[in-house]
Length: 394
Length: 209
View 1 (cartoon, helix red, strand yellow):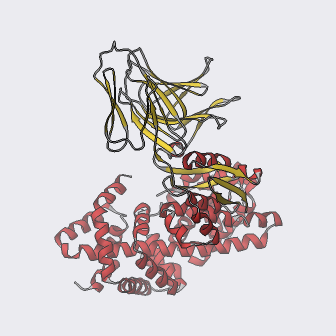
View 2 (view 1 turned 180 degrees about the vertical axis):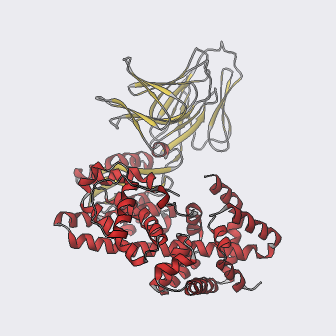
View 3 (view 1 turned 90 degrees about the vertical axis):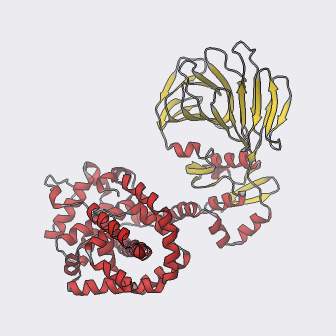
């Protein structure tokens, strides 16, 4: 068939309905036609894509043109106050483009805009963190897990500790329940994260500068661990043995569920975010409790113990390998960067700490890419000096 | 595809806090929808567009009066239609005479699939498309939008643009055939293969979502 013949199809409404998935009957008709005429599959698929691209492109152009006319009307007819508001538009453009960058993957953009600033940053770049942790056994023996080979790490009583190919630590108990309980502690340094599986099958992801103290066998009526910093849990379901997590100022109690606890000592609040299931958060030393539903976050600080609805994606972005800043103050963002890139932060202007930031990027980018993204807000600029990031006003 | 009624949060963010982003999101949606129903009511494109912009100008300048509006979708559509037909003045009072039958939904548009194609199209194809669309006249570009995005009939498009049905047919056909030729069979081939490998899965996903 000639090219033009496929183009002729667009004069048939049923073909357009098929391309834009507007009508089941026509979709079935053309799918059947393609099965009977397989030599046209590529041509038809390409035609469909061209039509969709043309639809999108023409829509974008027209809307942009009409919206510009509207902005012009608003400017002409209104008070100075409103004109000022309109001048905010470029900021949204910046926010929108940042979001766009994420989907493209950051990389592309940063290499397409080789400004002097970037060049300066890239000269002294800092690599992201990785899988690093220190396992302290009950007898005080310390195992550094970064370079350890796969396989058996240690034997403790009837429990074996193994490191798997993907770097996570797994406990296997061949133990009888009467075995004496031994506690181990896993600690991640600045610039480290680690994934381990406890003896009951519970998965724990530790973020940088965090720790978990846990028994090698859960022999009692409940399963109890202690954490500092930030950890994401996927607790193995066991209604007979509730799982308790003690962290700064609170205890979280669950039966089996997925959630994140963020309680770094340098953060003013401890945040517990529930992804699925149900958890009970109790403020230490009180009877005050909050029961969370999926999508909710318990916030505990000196003055406050409350629940709010949140985007859970933001809370567990780190575990999925992303930074996700959604209207987040710069100082909070910089603390995350400090922990993950193992750097110190210095502010030339402390007023900048409250600047709100948007954006998301892979955690495995070099620090310059993250800083470049943050610079797009137009408010701040960064300078890398050795192990320190200096934040100043743009 | 989102419907106007789903934009309650955007409406509230604009009315209560004056969020510019929310205002833009509302425009982004209603620009399509109001053009669609306006043209279906046999009104000329230019007039429909002016009514939409007048409506949004009114909304922008009278934000504080709009706290009383409960059903933003009914409100916007009703006062838009009133002004379109009778050129009445806009008001912030909510109409009680919203007629669902008079305001049909837009035909489905595969937004998610379109986004996927846009993101995965080869750079060269995207460039060719942009360059080509730049060269089209406003009226050609409008007809492509009305036919492919809004899903209007050839008759409705002819009416809205004050041309014959035959002109609409030919304009759209020529535009598509020419672009297809420019992109070239070779690139289309590669593009299509990538998609068809994934296509089955993706289409399944879109149908259930």
